[in-house]
Length: 464
Image (cartoon, rainbow, N blue to C red; front, side):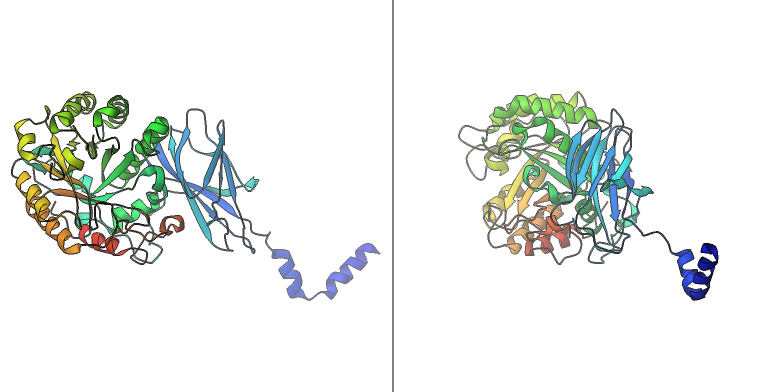
């Protein structure tokens, strides 16, 4: 009777309903898929994509996985991180926890060592997304496609190992070149503005040649946690390398202004950086950001440089080294620490060295412009920091004066880097506040006036 009743009941159901019931799929669930975006042998950049395949929004997410012994996690972005042994747990931030049906979010991290994640769980369930192929660049959030550098080659592929020839920066073929790019803000404050996503935009959309990695020594920087900040610089070098950009390692000493105050810290730091990256052809060392203060003369700076450069040279014989100049790297124009004549008469005791000049257009008028113009006749120069505002990095922009400087640099092939690639509240930061938390780096909608101006000047074709 039971079987007959079941048959009768089924017979009473429309055939279309029976067919639908037979093929109804299991409810879709969220997945987390992993891909190695780049791999440089000793480490790699990993990315997880969490996709909500279900019918209701996720309100939070947590991804857990194991890494084999000998493989560690370095810096990370777009997620929180807690670790216990080889088990790592990434969680959402306040702005990316909600995932609508059909939508995705990503987070990433740097892995050191040969291994890859295993045993992945998303919110306590198997991730289900597997391991995906290395992703190809997609359009930026505003729909502006990434651009390919002229000739389809990155700046590093086009120029190779740089060297100083006479008073010029030259590429591997001996041709004088000019690099143009951006400096990070202090990585202790604005690491969320220098991420793989933002550096994709900087390299492909802005077509920058060089990234300056600004690591403060004091002010909450290196001295507070040398291991953490050294690892961050390692990671940024790898991210710049993977995108074909040159990387300036900026020892951002500022207060106190005597570089010898941090001499032993500098020895330790540059020994490790040069030792690990000696085989690369894209690393440039800036060993003293802005020497300043009473008694900090060119002789003081040279004494420091003559001790730090050999630390680099015994490990990396070819890299270009940049040396700060007196009075906040103004070539002496902001004080009496000695100008280009003094430096030229008593240069640093090493080859492949260039001297640093900084300016801020709204503060530094014709006197400073004349100073750097005259210095270019005597010394190889690299402008590792400038802004279109006053020397605080804030206030109204003086684009007219800034353009006069850039016209001079173009005529002399003097390389330059702009301050700064962040969303700081000051007018000198290229992004509007909140951009970095939102991850909305592409296009021009989130750029301040200074950001629009400098982006256009970086994007003009290179003469490589």
